[in-house]
Image (cartoon, rainbow, N blue to C red; front, side, top):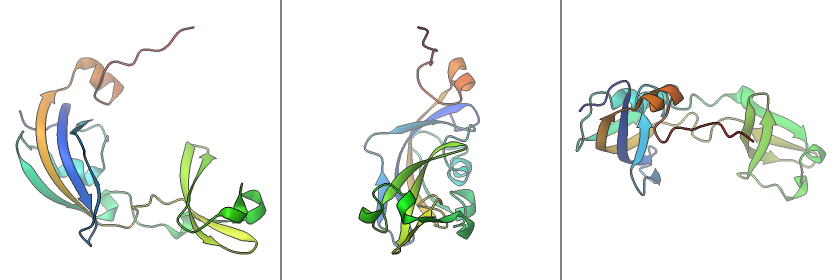
Length: 159
């Protein structure tokens, strides 16, 4: 079976940037539901038609991954409004609530009276390099198509 809309794809992968340093790799195969935006768009398009056992090298530009780095997403806040502001260092990650739910902010700069937080995804503006091995492709179950991702059917808990 080939990868197409509504198939569950099991794959191994390694992710690196232009410098070839591997940022992330799968310890065991990961699954995703193809065509349901479970993975970044550029990688999903590149895997269209892949068969089990096939290996692909894929380069994904920022626009088809996490977007360009947006300077509008740099937020300057008074240091006294940030919990443990005195202990902050550039590169630290903080969790915050937004109108869309929790987001991760990266401390970009710490000043005497303010902190610059970056709300961009850490890989925004980066070209991504994937080495992918397709392990298996199967038709999705009806409940997987309904829930939009592979795995057991999630039933609401009633109390």
